[in-house]
Image (cartoon, rainbow, N blue to C red; front, side):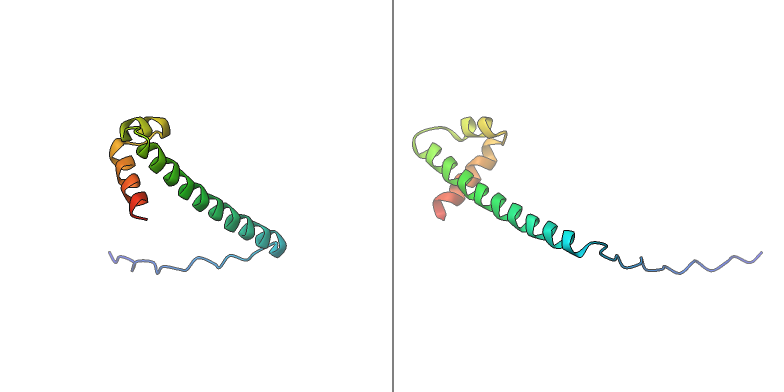
Length: 82
């Protein structure tokens, strides 16, 4: 019996944007969301640093935000260096 050669891979067809206006709106919204996330992350670091400086432990801070003490300790150290 003869076996058939393996099938060649075919490329997926390129996606075609069906609504250019909506696509532009979505991309702009994603840019805004990313900027908001970046701003919030920076603010979170500032607040963690201040909380640490007034005497809260990294364990307590971690409990408040649902993160490990190790992660909070690292973030506080990075914030101090910045």
